[in-house]
Image (cartoon, helix red, strand yellow):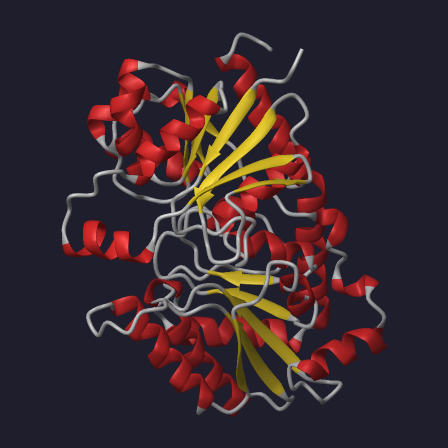
Length: 396
């Protein structure tokens, strides 16, 4: 008997397989690759050069092509949109005979599919990884909610009034098999990798940031702290920043304007290098060149993927005490989270402690690596999803 199909549904703007180290697409890919009891179907938008139907390592991918003229005429200039993305998605779902719909972090997909689900109900898993508004009229159509952290579960049950017993917390994962910690890399090889990013001195301390270059990620604040640190630190000090800028020339697009301003500022800051947006498979090589990883989020970051990637690399993490970050970092020896992430001096003081104490850095890094080894591999995530699917389709 063939396995039942689970359809992983992605927003149109999320390229798949992932080309950025973004949490949503990465989670879908890594879980789909490890599904054993269900057949994975991924439905997403089509980007230039991609096939509309493709089989990749056991994943069936169906892509939806919406032409540039169509988008401009029906989705930007007017709101007519005679054949919406979700209607096309529903047509594929029916043709592929999907048994379960798994919507990944986009409530608008639930809104668009709602009219179809009312007429032809299917089990729906709604995966929530940030605080996007949930369309209240379609909440009853969701069979099960998955929150990326306890923080998001509290938000769902508090703001949206969803019963706690309908929400599962399934933490995301990291590919630990292909992510050796920095101490398993030979010193000569690691130094060679550091040279690629302009780090030449053997005694240099390298601070890393990886994430989107947007205001709420706190990039400006960590640049302020780094400038002060360079004036106080006797050792060579570097800050390497990996992340993408919102692709828009619209002066009203605040995220794009902020990102371009940050890139311009980094170009003039001594010791700071922007390495651009890295391919998901290149992010680990970037991480193992560092000594300290920072997450200076100004917002309540639900559960950043970069945190797990840095932990897999064996790096100590200095982060804001916000959102789901605390759920992972709580108990890490020797490293305090920053209670007020906008307080630059707090970052300076805590970073100075890590810079001056190698044992502190090593102890924290090894504790974090042991934590991801124990609890955050992708196999665990895939198993928890399939256990959830079993409950929805009667234990298949």
